[in-house]
Length: 313
Image (cartoon, rainbow, N blue to C red):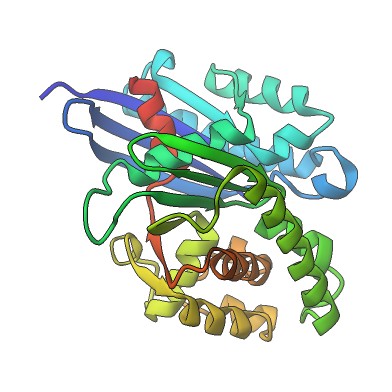
């Protein structure tokens, strides 16, 4: 078996993640060697100021320094590293500072991909291993990030894609930042905001045509862990879990009516998601209701895996 060792880095609005893996293009198999995440909150304040905050940049550069050591320890050359930056750095006026810092640490420049390319990478990562029942095509994959959500519909090939500016960090900052417990008015305004964005997504992507709805990223996997009642985060249990819309509605209602301390005490909750999970769950619920899906398949394989495959190809 001939494999290719790659290092994929996905820097989003809320987290920066690393995957070092051996890929076998002939079989479509991906073997993880190291997969890790740091909550860097690069999107801190971007929606309001249009700039990357100095503290957010330093948190991101600290994560990059950590990752540079891991990449070197696994012997991955610079020609097999790809650093993809998404929503926050698309929006920022001072993106050059971010680019120069990353290049100085890792030796590669971050690629600020379009929303459509982000969607295609997510689709590849999420669907490469989905074949046959109960995962029938066509798939509607959505990647619910910190600043944006990408939608992509397809089967063997991508048919349509669109990125819209709804995510757990952006929605929290827009609607839930004023109080620990959202008011009914704040929730109503957040719902209206999400629904308007879904109208935009539906202009390019038929949101009700899929046989299988696939959800990606930390909001979705965290909600899955809560539904499953896990005593700790368990990637193997969460991967390909199937959540009903009723389960997601119940968890969303609970998260919208609990304090920061109560959310922090949930066993599967990452500390960096405590203050944004309620808004993220609301976006998830609105997506399920809009698509009419009875359930969502949760995938731990997402844009990070898609980036890895893009290096090999």
